[in-house]
Image 1: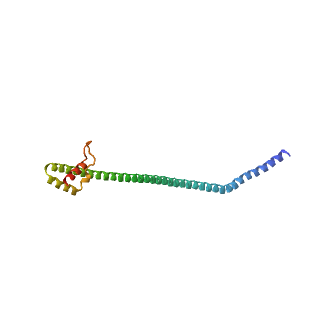
Image 2: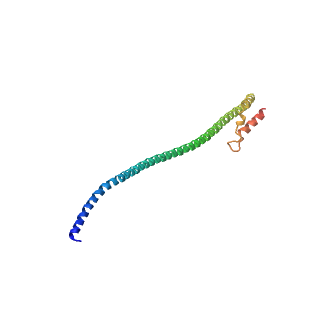
Image 3: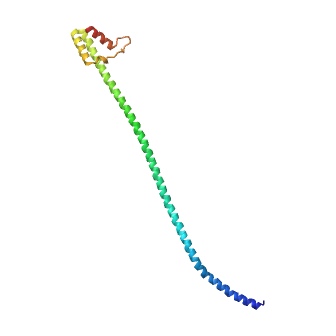
Amino acid sequence: MSTEESKSTESQETPKQGSINRLPPKVSSKKSKPVTVYLSVLFVVALLLLVMSFFMQQRSHQALEDLTTSMEESQTTATLQMDNQRLQYELEQAQNTIGQLEQTQADLEKQAQALEWLRLIEEAVRSSYGEATELVDQFEESELADYLPTESVVEGAKSPADTYKDIYAMLH
């Protein structure tokens, strides 16, 4: 091949290459448009999925917080119920103790009344037999004789109950 032929071949090839180079951008822009739309749609779908995932996670987190709050409230309620039961039991025990103390107080008051009757009867025995008999009868009617102590506070002395029995035997 001669230089002219090669130049003519080059010149023939050059326009073809130039025209080929010009055609592909037009063809490639037509082909790239659907790809761009496809990628854009995929991007939008991925973005929507991320947003949905975010909202679902927020909802799940809120539900978990609500559940935790509910569990804490139920534990607090259970604790309060147990405290309430404990306090009711303590109140019942305190009321029983109060009842026992009131009964003891009533018994001690009756014992004091019985001892006062015994003192009056002993004074009456020293002064008048008739008055002593009358006081013993009244004392028997009051049913306070059972409240006289059966033990003496003074060691070796007779108990008030024994003293009353001796006086009663002497007068009746």
